[in-house]
Amino acid sequence: MILRHGSKIFELWKTPPLKLTLDFYLFNWTNPQDFQNLDIKPKFEELGPYRFIEVPHKVDIKWHTQNASLTYKKQSKYYFDAANSKGQLEDKIVTLNSLAVVSNSAEIEVKQIN
Image (cartoon, rainbow, N blue to C red; front, side, top):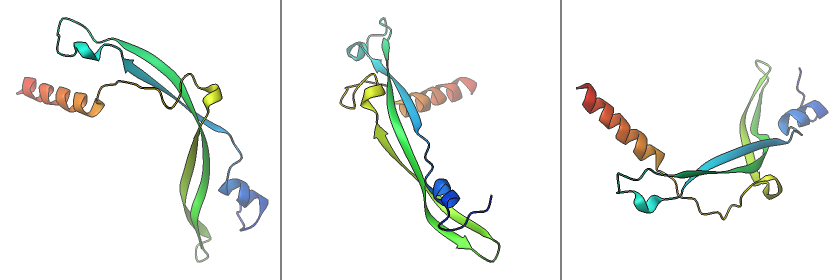
C-alpha cells in the first residue's frame, strides 16, 4: 500500500474508523477488615466489565524521502462507555496491591531456595 499525504487511504490509516472496545474486569475484596485474621480467607467479587472505547490516531508523522518511509507515534484517547458497562467510574473497589504481593512471594521463593 502506498501512502500519500492528503489521500483518502492516508487519512484512514492515520485515524482508523474502527470502533475498538476494551473491557476491564476487576476483583473487589469484600472482607478486607479480616486481613490480619489468618483463619478467614479473603473473599473477592468480580466486577465489570468496565468498557472503554479507544480512538487511536497517529501523530508526529515524518516523511523520509531518501528511503521512501515514514515514522510516527501512536496516540489513543479512551472514553468510558457507561451504557455497555456493568459499573460506573465512581465505584469504590478494594483490591490487593499486586506489586507488593508479587514482590513478597518472590522474596519467599528466594528464601525457600537457599
